[in-house]
Length: 355
Image (cartoon, rainbow, N blue to C red; front, top):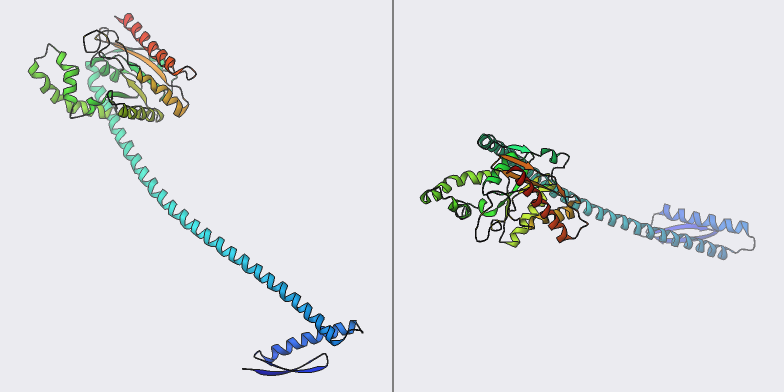
């Protein structure tokens, strides 16, 4: 609705048609009248028209400045809104990631609990094995002082094989915890019987041939349980790709604080034309196992220590020699041969002393 409001500005009456309220228009007119009158009172030479122009310029200046401020305020508000939206998205993403992490942490806790329970059961199995077999294989341990002061997870114990004798006695009497390397076929239910027959049983001339495989079938479940209890690490001699997994599992075990026990004797190296491990003394050693040291050092910056062990069936002793610490500054091949030759030399010396 259009209203007609009468006002008086600088002594001149005006009729203004407007949709605004009369009170609002009168307030505007009063403000303009006061501003023009103030200019006229301070300058006698100023006309009403010029005073009105000055007032108009002043009002326009205020308008534009206030418009600029409003635009700036609007821009800041938009920035604040955008920042708030980004913050909300970031918060939602963080909450989602946190939920995922909580689920993963719960899964890892459950997995760790299962590992701890399994390991507890395994260690119980090891203790049971030792308790049952030690009376049958009583041995004296010589050289335990060579293990003192060495950090768990850095020791690689290297023992002679002597067919089954070395692994049995070493597992019973070495006085530190360890995980043994075991030929993968010995941990495979499908091939263990034939592997043991070809590797050991067929050379047992005192045993009737017709008994050999049945005996192996009887003891296979026990052997598989033993390897599981010992947390044996499978060794794949004829598969380089899988052998990489052997070294990876070994380094992970050492990082977790486990020592390693292995039997790197070459079953074809002690006598030309014959197959089988040396029953006395020590045959030639495979050398690849020494790669444990540089791999372990590369991952942990810790130096592995190789410990020679000789199990003597004749004197019923387990002899432990002085450790050979890995030296990373030496050439790779030279260091490998230094370790292997040093181990073999000590093991042969222990054999000579005990025979």
